[in-house]
Length: 525
Image (cartoon, rainbow, N blue to C red; front, top):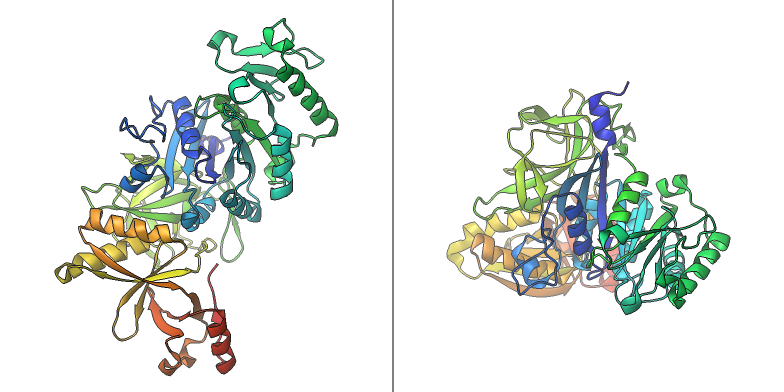
């Protein structure tokens, strides 16, 4: 007899939605929330003028630009499952935030634009999923517009991403001539733009439409049937095991904007997506969600000012095992300090409610007064351990930054330290003059930083670009002398007071290494 806790854990499905910007990721998130009853009216990203913004885009700059720059967490119940969705930034400048978010999920949903196919950012995020062996489900979106041929899209998926694909359904027509989808898995045809009672049409043993219907005489139906015959004879076999191992991606066609195919996708996804998975510790032990009875989790994201009125900071925790209860004592493995957690929250983008309990697979927010760092492990039992490290990227572009108004230096330093702790930008200071420098993976990070300093901390900043640099940390810091610093290899300190060399270019780094062979340099990811 399984316990209530075990049943709760096994009902969790936690996934991230990944895609290139504009493929319709935020729209599909909205529609999924609509099915879960979490929202009544999906605000499409397109509807800027009406003041209706996407539920998952809560930050001011996101509403202005129509892009997601932070990972939102949303939760809803559907057919006995509790679904946790993490909507990730699609923009490449925010790949680090997305990368860490992918460490907190058990599966990923990849949204592909039918007209554009696989795009650069999708490929990058896909590789991260493959590296971790995360099961990937593919939703090919925007079938209500003209796009590439479906067979061409499947071929591209397989060739560019190097993964086998199994179409769970197949489009009949496209764009203005989009008639619906042939559902291979549920053995039915789902009509596009029709009354609810006529939505599904039966198919017979031969896989043909079982009733007389105007669709039957169209060339689109004939073409779809030919394609399906080809898929049945020469396509990949369906394999639940291969899906679970991330070797086969089930493919769904649909249109998130018109809410077509999304429900079919959700119901099939829930059947095959994995329940919460074990996680590896630094000493290579697996913590099993059910067998490990004590609470354990890790912090994969810290977000400042989700409520600008209260200047608060939230640490996002992925619960790996056991059960969280508000008011319980937890231990922070890094410091070995225990404390009582009285304030905890769950999310629907920026709508939050206090959560009294949560189990493995759930994502909760803990109010943070500066206690937590990204990658921290929290445990509820006596035995502490550390989950494997979360990735940190080596920044590529740098700026010098200062407050325009010297009188605001207190707010300036407070704002910088809070935003740096979120992990999107990295903080450096020069050795003696203590000038502040910031490093990031992409330019947009600096724009978001400048915007948030002004709007959330009331500090206008001056940013002086110093271009791309190659940042390298030092294994044997004790052997570093200040005289090694020059205009082409600047020595600075990071926020943890580690020494870092910023090299002008590859040539400067090679020249330095040849002159100082005993100095061992290393980079982050």
